[in-house]
Amino acid sequence: MAKRSLDLSPKDGLMNVPHDPYWDVPISRREVQEAVNQLAQNDAALAAQNDTSNIVLNYLCEKIGIERKEIDAWAAKKKLILQM
Image (cartoon, rainbow, N blue to C red; front, side, top):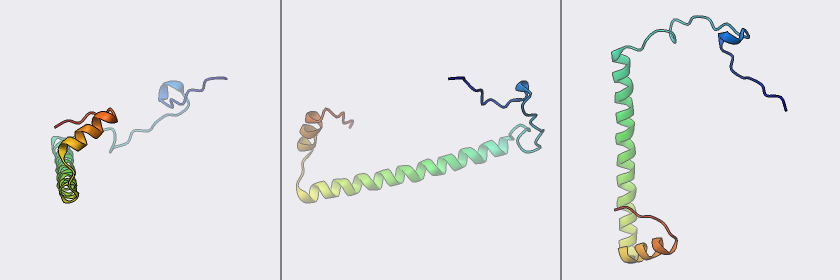
């Protein structure tokens, strides 16, 4: 089977990419800081969701009487690695 190059960079001569005033300028420090702030907010939201799910799981295990040693035994049987 013949290999096809999907690289459409100007060196191939297949396509000349025009200069774009938005994409072809360096990113500013302000834009970097805004992106980092958005990532930090997303990370905080995910961490809060994880904390909430852990609390709910702990509540349910306590409610039905499952102890940590049972979970450890099950994980060892299934060859899972649990980190505390």
